[in-house]
Image 1 (cartoon, rainbow, N blue to C red):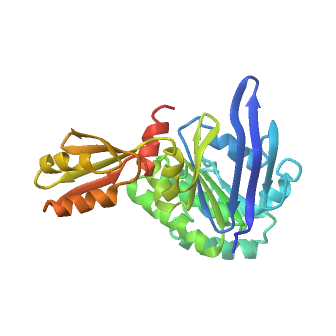
Image 2 (image 1 turned 180 degrees about the vertical axis):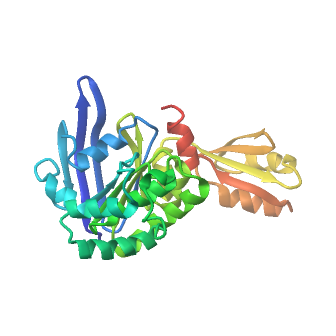
Amino acid sequence: MEKERVIVTENLSKRYGDFTAVHNLSLEIGRGEIFGLLGPNGAGKTTTILMLLGLTEPTGGRVEVLGFDPTREPLQVKSAVGYLPERVGFYDHLTGKENLLYLAALNNLSKEEATARMERLGAQVGLSEALERKVGEYSHGMRQRLGLASCLLKSPSVIILDEPTIGIDPKGTRELLELITSLKETGMTVLLSSHLLQQVQQICDRVAIFVRGRVVAEGPIETLGRQVMADQPFVIEVQCLEGNGRLQEYLPGLDGIDACEEVEGKLLLTCSEDKRVEIAAAVYRLGLSLMHLRLRGYDLEDIYQKYFKEA
């Protein structure tokens, strides 16, 4: 069954004078999906988020969030969407509890309902014991957790997180990512913007790769490589425990292998098609032990190298 679309953009663009921050962006994000906007700083991710929230008006194209136009119906969008910016603003002289109660009042929640939700969310984000402390005493990671609690306070259908783990230590990052992943079980849609490859790869169902305001590839992580490398030859890395000499003599005779060279202890094979099965069979036939076999260019790390380093 096809998922309900909760975020749709068609040829969405944003220009500032002669500079195009976002160019002809077309995306569809379904309910219960964790979708990643992956790209270097300045690629257009935050500008896209601002258009989704109705905080800046598109120059061209169309955007729809939960059936609403953020430009014409911004209040409906804001009431149903939680947003965690890269830098969260709280009143440092107030406690975590007082900050959440203030935000709850802004969202028309009664004090009783707000208190009940706050206690549940405090436990969910791991801040139960810290809510009575002033936010000025919080670490950066604690502020991010409080920010996530503030997003969830109004029980949104969608949450948008802009670089949520920047400046957080590895343990805090792992815990925050686990918390974000758990939201999927509730049917909530999560849009995550980040330039951090491993985090996007760890939790996202699908990814759109941004470079200079354009999406250069979009889809499930396992299919992105095929999109990016569609017009490129297959390059396969292989290495044997006993050394590569016998294999290097044997492989050029296989149909579809166009070139073979040894680089830093590995054979690099240029092929017209994916020949990994045939290569593994050749290793077995020669009585060798396979140490390494990889199709280059088809994982997110390779895509990162291809686009982000250039950008």
